[in-house]
Amino acid sequence: MVVKGISGEILDSMKSLMVGSLILTFFLGIGIGYYFPSHEPHQIGVADTCPAEVTSLDALNATLADPEVIRLLSNKNIDTISFSKGSYSEEGNYTQIVFHPLDPNPDDRMTASMIVAQVNDSCVVSAAYETYPSYIPEVET
Image (cartoon, rainbow, N blue to C red; front, side):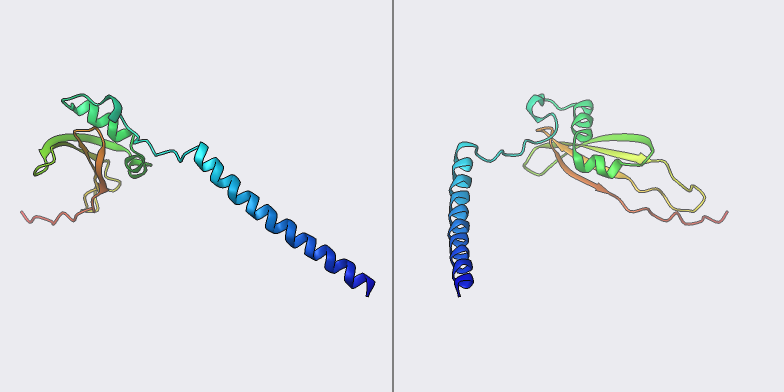
């Protein structure tokens, strides 16, 4: 019985120690959160230095700083890049950049997919996506 009584006392003291450490951890977490507020993510790109009139070069720099565009472009050989300007209904203008990768198999009657990015007036990429390849029908002559 003496052995059971000693282990019971040890378990009770371990429970108290565990509860105390959990409470201490909780209050330390609150204190650290108060003194070190959460860091708001900063938009990757050139938004801080965005000029009033966005040029194609500004749009390209913002596009190449965007992680989603970089992911879409990874492991692709780009043949050409085309630029066009457009406007949203009431929200401002954008520059659209289309990356045309090399066709991996030009004889398969399929076009290569394209990567499209739109950069708004704030030099922020507002859309980035990859198009589907399309079939080129055979023309009989």
